[in-house]
Image 1 (spheres, helix red, strand yellow):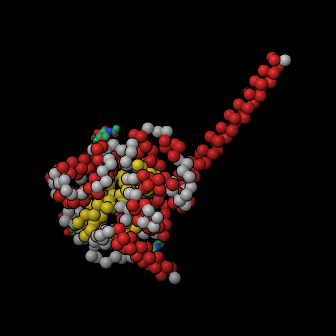
Image 2 (cartoon, helix red, strand yellow):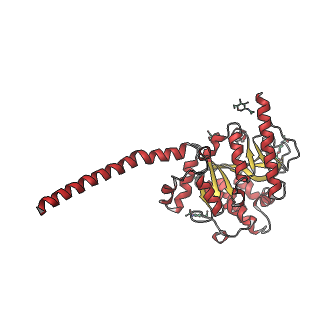
Image 3 (cartoon, protein in one colour):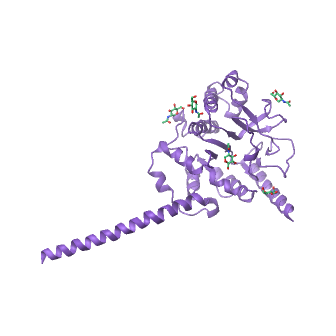
Length: 329
Ligand SMILES: *[C@@H]1O[C@H](CO)[C@@H](O)[C@H](O)[C@H]1NC(C)=O
Ligand SMILES: *[C@@H]1O[C@H](CO)[C@@H](O)[C@H](O)[C@H]1NC(C)=O
Ligand SMILES: *[C@@H]1O[C@H](CO)[C@@H](O)[C@H](O)[C@H]1NC(C)=O
Ligand SMILES: *[C@@H]1O[C@H](CO)[C@@H](O)[C@H](O)[C@H]1NC(C)=O
Ligand SMILES: *[C@@H]1O[C@H](CO)[C@@H](O)[C@H](O)[C@H]1NC(C)=O
């Protein structure tokens, strides 16, 4: 009796174990790849904000040092190129800069698919939560994983520190072998800018004022938008740039770039610098009027205060909508 009971029990246990195994296999074989594909192929921004993050499970199981690598690989355009932006808590509020930035990608011409390749470097908890809730490619700069030169800077909120952290982070992306397009979040994307990068040029930067000659160091650079190719010259250049911080402790990265752009060291490196034409990469500092038939990106810079910036951004979006509807009627 006891023997047959225990045989029945063990048979039942075995068949239960088999069923459970089968369920796990189905999960692994169907649900997980499906979920991953869904996460990777369909831009989260097009799926809406509130979907629960699926990819997080995979992300949490890898070493912090590899997180950057994983995120870059997921965001890659296929030739080791990614787009990056930094995100702080304030600009993540509903109706704030981030929403207008994302809207431009949606209503721009051929820009919505670029969101698949956009990495958000988050600099605050709210920003990171918003990013993961829309299942973007999110890298949390404030916690683990970032190999910043001065780790003690992590939690200092100052703007100066943020621009330098950003620069230091960009150097790491170059060291991983990725080219990147960096864009501030207060830059609207109306057309794909990639066709307008120069075929030559390690470091290509937009301008507050562009005087017509792409190689002339006298252009006024605006480091809120740049395109950087990964190679030994740019890696050395980013290290040099970062280290120049100690010489100019009061200045942010863009001002310091302006001081060092003539340095012999950059010539010795053989670094090629190109200034992007404000016809395609426009901003509010530029006095040249904007050309809606050409413009790819529009920077709401040279405005003091968030509310002024927001009203400029909204105005640009309205103008673009008008331009687009006028064009097609
Ligand atoms: C990388 O791929 C993108 C998308 O296909 C393309 O626009 C860009 O020109 C490529 N970059 C290089 C350096 O070939
Ligand atoms: C949008 O892109 C398409 C395809 O590249 C082009 O034919 C069209 O002229 C563009 N429209 C505008 C308003 O730029
Ligand atoms: C961190 O960055 C430094 C400076 O570039 C580099 O020498 C070091 O190997 C990096 N460490 C890791 C773990 O990537
Ligand atoms: C553009 O600037 C470079 C560097 O200053 C200079 O050598 C070159 O002659 C300039 N080209 C034109 C067309 O002015
Ligand atoms: C840097 O140079 C070394 C030696 O010349 C080369 O092996 C390496 O691939 C280069 N790295 C990059 C990112 O170009």
